[in-house]
Length: 411
Image (tube, rainbow, N blue to C red; front, top):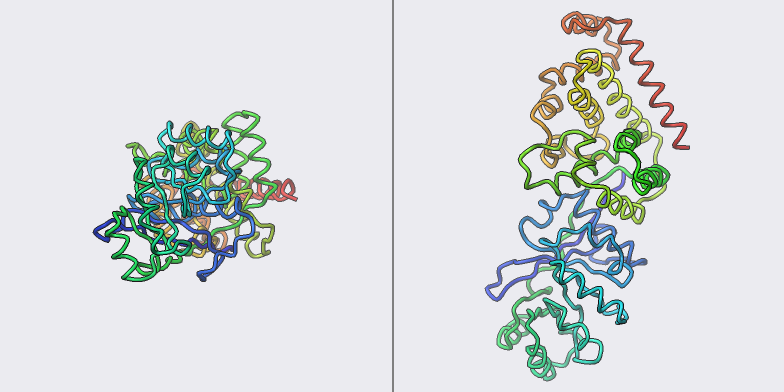
């Protein structure tokens, strides 16, 4: 189990109403970022916001300012971010080249909003970038008070919003308000809030295999089968797919739908981001839990195939129910909280939360079998009416062989 953290500091308008948040890398319950690799830090912020903690939980309907360095700015990974909800904040360490200027213009024309961080003077660097920016963030701590009015007058030559950052006192806030700043950020208003969550850490080898399939334009069925080898990735995929499809009327409830809705390019970018953030440690207990989740998913799929041979949608829903049934233990979160963040069908939700409906009955059957409650299993099989004990044992062995095969290829 890996605990994940994200810093979030509000950005206020002139009425001191929150209009956005800056999203900050955090390595724990501390105000110190501990950033060693800027790309990895920004990748962690993106992954944790959009795939793990959930964009609705982190931002609601507001925008998130995300720090980007030159490498991330030039990367296709930027396109993973929804342009309607982010502001790309160029760090002061970005060396301004013709390529960087062209890239900023390209992103601006695509609808992304850009902010220039740590503005303290109008120089050759800022003159190249300010025409392409939506927001200029002025660093109060690096400016003498009497130099601020002249800088603000100069910045008003460009049609952009002015944001005073590192406002640390009421006096500074009043002074910046009088100078005409549009937005404000700093300890005087609020310190960064640490948001924490948990995720299971997928293996790098599994990610690389999936990435290879996606980049080689493999069949959706092959990508779907590879996802089934990695239960911890299924949750992230469904979160990402439902973030992308939040405006659609139908529910994303199967792996295939998630892959199709997310799209190959977005899928590739998400996995590339995960490779920046994934670790290599994995406990034996967690491995066992993930194996059990994979076995449940496969066994439910096999049983559903016997029950409804021609109903592929039902079989996929059965697999999804089985593989998600242990997420509370896998992620260390209450199951209702997890399910609330996935746009699952009512059939799957009822099965997971209450063990009701056809899928709920199948899941309860497997749980009784895992506890070796043979008497109850026999009664339930009789009530189901389409499978006997011998057929269940054969299906269970097939599911175990499938799961053991996954273990072999992951070594």
